[in-house]
Image (cartoon, rainbow over all chains, first blue to last red; front, top):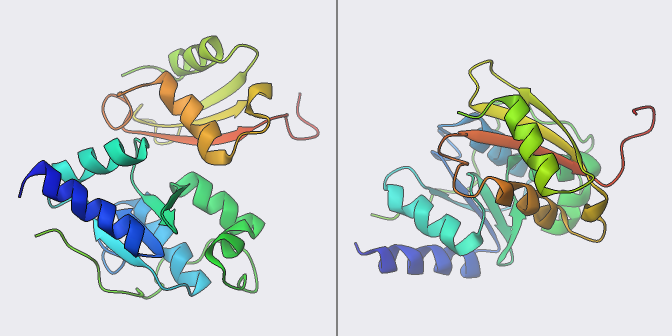
Length: 127
Length: 81
């Protein structure tokens, strides 16, 4: 797979998936605490989202950061726009802004959920 | 690997008038957290605020600095000086 194909695939995921999470690992098996937290937050909001594991090929991360201008993982996109990484998503979840951005109801209490929420969607993969 | 002190100085130098508090989250020197109060954040989205800080460390985040957690605000929260 060429760099260009990887970039196109990332671009496609960002523009076609309403809520798109790039993470280390998968929502079922996150491989980094920051990625785990963001997928748990998304699970708690009940929104449908797609996720892509950036770990299988280091070029995924390079191309993603090149496109987004954002250096760290995870990265959450909603309707094609970068919302942020773990810090911003956590802050927005706690303030209720995230539900607004996602277009869902804020769950009862804005608490960072305990780390065992089930995953929502099968991960996207670049083979 | 830049120290917390170095990271603080670099943020404050790059963003004139900013005040930064930098802590080492793990004690290992590579997972840092910076809380940055800067008037220049006014009118910017959170993404743009964080980008301003990330830009200070162009290319080092994910490298020498494995992770830099950020909290940005325009003014210090009440009760803090």
